[in-house]
Length: 94
Image 1 (spheres, rainbow, N blue to C red):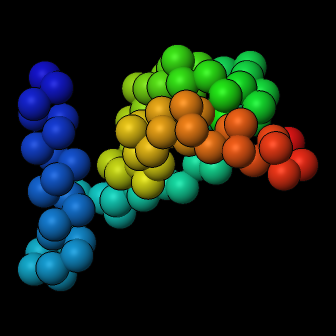
Image 2 (image 1 turned 135 degrees about the vertical axis):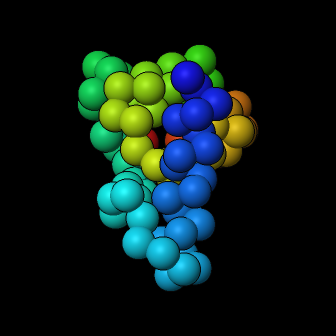
């Protein structure tokens, strides 16, 4: 079922972009910003410093809402949590 769902999302997006035929529905392309943290009961600080929580939040939201494209990249979230949290804190961003 997962493969069929994936193929349906890809087809929907390509059809909409190429304007070659009317997709079955408007593709949902979401930029979630701080929503995954709030939805999962985490803080933004958790997202910056704890890669496991960042991955968990992104994964749970993706599975719960089944949108077609999620802009946030899990690898970028891991990199952020591992590398940038401490750097930002050192210059006063919390």
